[in-house]
Image 1 (cartoon, helix red, strand yellow):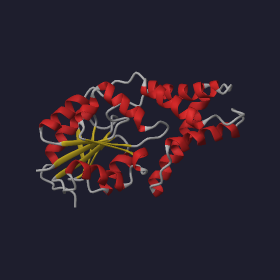
Image 2: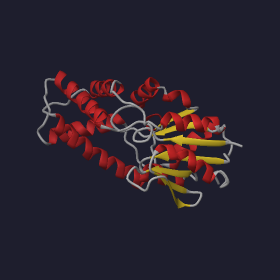
Image 3: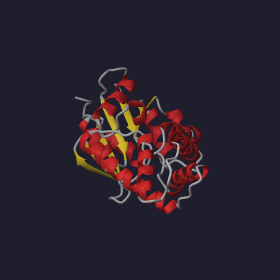
Length: 252
């Protein structure tokens, strides 16, 4: 029996908390500072949120994808339009500064992550990462996963900036599953993430079982669509979902 499970990274295995956002903003501030320009972190955060919202909508509506470099250039453009910076900063220096700061951010895995990954591997699952990127390259994310030891649990990694397309595009899910199964159809295939549009919808479009982590929902597991969609209040309940879907069959 071939069983696979793919995981989102940010907000699922690793928390997208204050420290990561601060590291991102500090990377931008440092690059601008070297160019002789000073911008306050709150102003940077506001523009980052704007650009991220627009990009998420575009990915959901048309499966479009902008690289981290393109998104950072858009951040600089909006800063100039508001009179916050005068000159164009070097985008390559900006990318490097952001990647270094994020890679060094003090991030600890979700407390349930290791237990869930160990349990699934012991149960014969092949594990993969399917991760979007926004303002930093996947190399920074991989550095954190390696430092925390999580990378050791995965048989395949698929990142949007390497593939050139992002969740919820089914292509990124299909590619990851193909890597995990050597092109064979799995008997069970689930994807776990914290974003409804990117993770749950993306998984279902790919004929995978979608598992959405909703920390504000009912404690435990809730079946949304039998054999297709489940919500869990914590990562640890993913192990319970596996029992529910084991008889559901694989990708169509």
